[in-house]
View 1: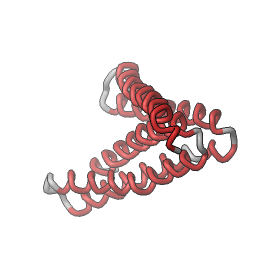
View 2 (view 1 turned 90 degrees about the horizontal axis):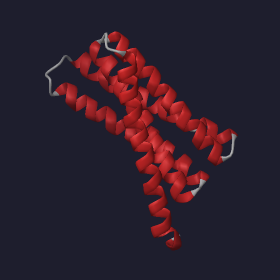
View 3 (view 1 turned 90 degrees about the vertical axis):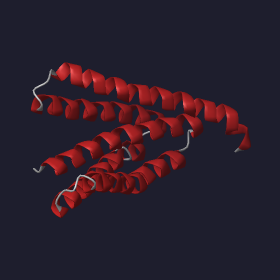
Length: 160
């Protein structure tokens, strides 16, 4: 696979995990609403996937690369982000929202571990260090989103 396609997939997968989990946890804690959570996931899958793909497109284009590299990275970023984000919707259709959020957090962290491990092996780095670093960043995002969701519910809940 070409270098820019790999970069697009890696970026799209990582962004799909971190962005979707942050939004999912924040919306859940802020609203406890199926509608808000599923709407957020679908919005991430569509709008944010296009946004990230365009960002990757412009980034690769600014490096004066071949058109095939530019469009390959654009498509791979969009496809990875779109598909990964949609996987987080699956548990919501089959279980309580609270359980689905917990399953999604586990799923996201498992995906992030797998991707991090693969990257570390490819780069001949110590997998545990890379996995721990990426998991720590993911967990920080989840924790911040959790507390922001609580703050939003406490601050604006009476306005709903």
